[in-house]
Amino acid sequence: MGLDYSFKLYTQRDKIPQMLTAVAGIATPYVERQNIPFILNDGTQILLPFSSNFKMEPVSIPSGIGEIKLKTSLVFPLDEALYQYCVVDLIVGQEPMVVEIDGCQYGYVGTIYLTITTGNKYVELSFTAATSRMSKLFLASTSIQSTFQKLLSQTNGILGIIDIEEDEYLVLGDLNRTISIDFEGYIYDDEKSLLIDIDRWTEALLSKLNI
Image (cartoon, rainbow, N blue to C red; front, side):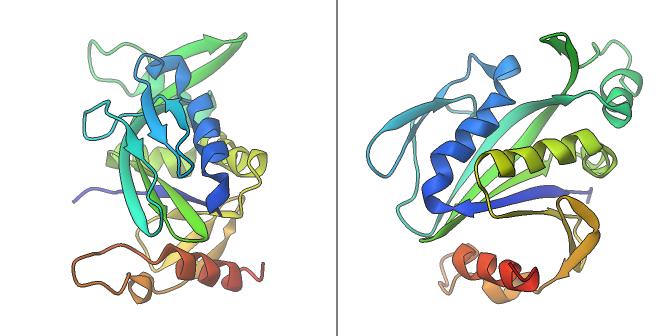
């Protein structure tokens, strides 16, 4: 089994449209042709550059506890770790994964698995690396970390963590700070479901961070 590191961002449920739109803002340069309709709980739709199970059919945001699995590709301002990933360490014949946007160099990273887990009060957006090499990039690139931190601040999100598949989670924005919490204690109480109770989980994270 390879590494499956992930960035997990948490926000209030009513901030879902803002958060998804912000994520789309760093995906658009490469996947602008793949616009999937998202149907919000009030019936309105927004078009976003993601894919769901290789399909482009409309996706509805769950009205309560639920989960949506998507795929996307994102761009980040080029730093040393991204340059190594996108330019240097490529297989023979592979084109550099770099683009210039408004005079700045960006590295292209994908596929990234985006899982949206909803509760009645909170929502989690989990961005999981598709490969071990990408997982290592997530930890090495300050550009990627700061981009996800900006997504949180721009949308008035609550907190972010990095899951490195260990007993502790790294706190986004302060990697020297960790949270130790038992994930299994927050699985939704339903024999037919393995969904996490995102409301209780988020409250537990907030409590650990004294927020």
